[in-house]
Each structure stands twice: as structure tokens, then as C-alpha cells.
Image (cartoon, rainbow over all chains, first blue to last red; front, side, top):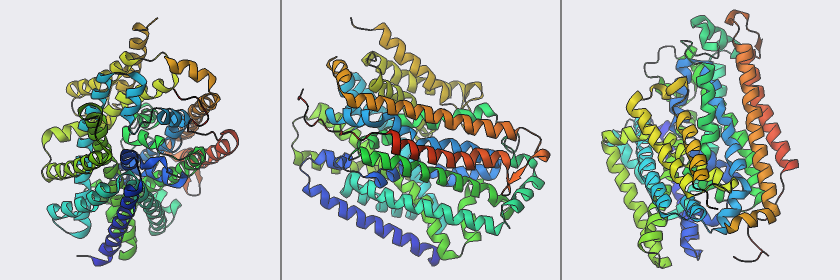
Amino acid sequence: MNWEVIIPLLIFIIAVFGIGYWASRHLRHKSNFMQEYFLGSRELGGLILAMTMIATYGSASSFIGGPGAAYHEGLGWVLLSMSQIATGYFVLMILGKKFAIMSRKYNAVTLVDFLKNRYNSTIVVILSAVSIIIFLFSAMAAQWVGGARLIGALTGLSYTSALFIFAVAVLIYVIIGGFRAIAVTDSMQGIIMFIGTFILLIATIIAGGGMGNIMSDLAAENELLISPFGVDGNLTSLYVSSFWILVGVGVVGLPQVAVRAMSYKDSRSMHRALIIGTFVVAFMMFGMHLAGVLARPILPELEVADNVMPTLAMTVLPAWLAGIVLAAPLAAIMSTVDALLLMVSSAVVKDIYYNYINPQATNQKVRNVSIGVTAILGVLVVLFALSPPEFLITLNLFAFGGLEAAFVWPLVLGLYWSKGNRYGALASIIIGVGSYIVIYVFFGEPLEQLGPFGMHSVVLPIVLSLMGYVFASLLTKEN
Amino acid sequence: MANDKHEEIDPRFKIANREALIGVGLALFNFIWWFAFAYGLGSKPVSEYHYILGMPAWFFYSCVIGSVIMIILVTVIVKFFFKEVPLDDEGEESP
């Protein structure tokens, strides 16, 4: 066991517990349990709002898969990853003050609450809640597996014990602290991600003998590594550009991100979050992916590209500093998993239980049910992660794309287009999720997310669900 | 719907709509800058590349300068064009 690496990780996990405990004390003092547990009573300030949005969005793929792909493909993949800078400002600007005002007017706690009040349709509510539960649960299980693997790789523990440690670390603060604990730990995790990226990038440039030196090493190996087109010339401008749909238009529709756009205190917090968020996400995505490319001359023969980030940190940094840097991907995974867990729990408790099963539930009853459901979901996801069933892996493949395609138009057009109605929303959700499944069935497993017409597989479902929303709304227009 | 009427009266929604459109404009600008430099300069044969601070020029302009410009643009636009409005319905008639 490498204690110099493990100690920073331990300190990090202890700090997370402390925050969970602190947030749980807030829960006791607030009169409206549900608003506090699932939305932090809409009290987030600018820094925390920016960080929780980025940390929720930035997952295992930003710190493990992304740098791995960049290691393999070269600068073309860094270019591709830079489409994500849009997430720093786009979601908050598009949903913006209108979403914040309307969700307060509706007294909405979840994204589905907003849809319920906007469209007045039971079937829209049930379909949305069920797709959130199914898709986000499977996405969460996949992230959970990633978190346990990472801890296993860093500490040398077996998969099962690593999974157990990860589960305890995440479950406790989410269950006792709710949204406030998540948002505050996300901020800490976001700062760790930022600092980790900074240290790793600088150390890698130095270890490689300077930027110019590394670039000529790369060009000497294969000159396409420093072109925008990828190592085989396969990254076409169309394919790379289509990622702007996934991360630009699409992220607006991700429930776990959208719900944060209703959680801030006032306009000033939103303004600050826009500036901080754009800066942090730009630097983090750029730094992490570039480090993946620059690692190539330093670690020329890596068998599993996804190992590039941990291996690089252990190679170019002293052990104690590597421990701090390696807390970054762990933080990224934790901050995604915690948001997903609470999101699924809110869909079960607020959108289904409180809306349809027991609308008369008292504050105390809601409290018990919320904490109970969150705990049960957490234990379930750990059991699934012990040996992930096939259907879960399949579902996870199109979880985010499917949700984006389902929700982006009912949300955005629901805010800004007064003619949009429940039939449009219904069409959009069914077509969005459905077309993703059809593409999967006919095209098979999307290779590198490559979908029809040489674009990312999310593009077609998003376009189709837009058409579905507009046509269904216009056709069923009430006079 | 009752909301439609309301939206025309509420001056906050005018501000919100304008800011959402600014968001779309920023993303379009972001995309065009990113695309034009990456594929405009990057499509040349690699042997003809220019280098700035050790990086290929297409990469430097598209990814490094592009990010810096977006950060500056977002800051300036938020500071000077975004308006602070109350988000709660204080002082309004309750529905």
C-alpha cells in the first residue's frame, strides 16, 4: 500500500463527512423539509452554484476517459473537448432567470415539478419521472463502478472493498445532508479538480522538456497527432462539431444539471456563477485533455489509454502530490454520483410518492420517506455495482443522450414558446428516448458515440424530438 | 393559459428573454471562432504549420485564445448587460 498517496485521499474523505454533518444540521432547522433536502432551500451563492454545476457535469469521463482518448487521438481530442466550454455559460443563460422565476412561482422542487405545472399532464409527469429513475439509476451504477475501480487502482484494495469504501463515503453525506451537503462538497471537489488539473498540466510540461519539445516529439511519432483530425485522420470536422449539440444544446436537458439552475439565491449569484463557471470549466477541460496528449512522449507505451491520468500523476509527481492530484478524478466521480443519487431519490419521493401516492404526507413523514428512499436506492446501486447486469450497461450507453433528447425541448420551449403544450412535451419525450433506442437496435453499440450521418449519436434524437414537440403542439392547438 | 397574459406584463421576462438570446449568440460566436481557427489553419499539411509558444497555431488560436476570449466576453457581457431582477414574486398579486 502506498500511504503517501492514500493519506491525501483519506483527508479528503474525512472532509466530505464533515460537510455532510454540517449540512444535516441545516435540515433540522428548516421548516420545509423537501425544499431543503432536494434543493437546499434555493440558497446557493455564486461560487457554490458554479462549482456544483461543473462538478456534477464533469464526471469520470472528464478525468479518466477523456484524457485517455486524448492520449490516443492527439490534439484533435483536445479540440473536441473544448466544445464543453459552452456548458460554463450556456445552461445558466438559456434557462436563466425565466426558469428561476417560473420554478419559484410553481414552487417547484424538481425538474418534473416544473413540467407538471407547465403542462398539467399526469402522463408527462409519470413518463418523465420514470425515465429519470431508469436512466439516471443506470448511469449512476456505471459511475459507481468507475469510482470503485479507481480506488482499487490507487490503493491496491480488491474491487469489493474499494466499492464498499466508496459507497460508505458517498452514501452517508448524501443521506444525512441532502442537496446542501452535495452542493458544498461539490465546491470542495470542484476546487480539488481545478488544482489537480493545474498541478498535473504544469508537471507534465516540465517532465516532457517544454511544450515545443513535446510537440516535436509528437509530430515525430505521427504528425497527425498534432493535427485536428486524430491519429488516423478519422475525426472529421462534422463529427467533432456535432459534440456541440451534446454539450451545448443538450446539457440544458440533463435533469441533474437543470435542477441546479433553480437552486440559486438571487440574480447576483447567477451572474457570478456564469463568470466563475466559464473560467473553471474552460481551464479544467483544456488542462486535463491536453495533459493526456502531452503524456504520450513521457509514457510512450501505455496499454490501457484510460490509465493515462493516474499513471502520469504517479510518474511526474512526488507521491504526496500525486495523492492530491488523484483525489481529483475521485472528486469528479463522487460529485456526479451524489447528484444522480439525490435526483433519482427526488423523482421517487416528490414526483411519484408525494404527487400521486400520498399527497397529504406530513413534513415528518416526507422526511422519513426521503431519507429512507435515498438509503435504499444507495444500497441497491451498490448491489448492482457488485456485478453490473447486462441491461444496466446497455441502458447507461444512452442514458445521458436519451435524457437530453427527452427533456431539452419540453424545458426550453416550455419556457419560451407559449404555444408549446402537453402533446408536444409527450411527443418530445417519447421520440427523444425512442429514437435513441431505435438507433441502438439498428446501428448496434455506438462506436465512440458515432451515430447516423457521421455525427454524434445524440444529434438525430435531439432534432427528431424538436420536430415532434413543434408539430404535436401545432396540430393539437386549442382555439 | 393564464400565464401568457402574465408574461407580456412582467418586465422581468423581457430581460430574461434577452439574456437567453445573448446566450445563444455567445455560443454561436464561440463555435464559429473555434471552428474557423481549428479547421482554417489546421487543414494545412502538418509540415507547413506555424507554432506559437510551442503549440501549433491552429490549436493556440482555437483552443487557448478561444477560451480566453470567451472568459473575457462572458465577464464583460454579464457585468454590463445582465440586469439584476428579483426572482420571487414579491409585491405582485397572488394567483
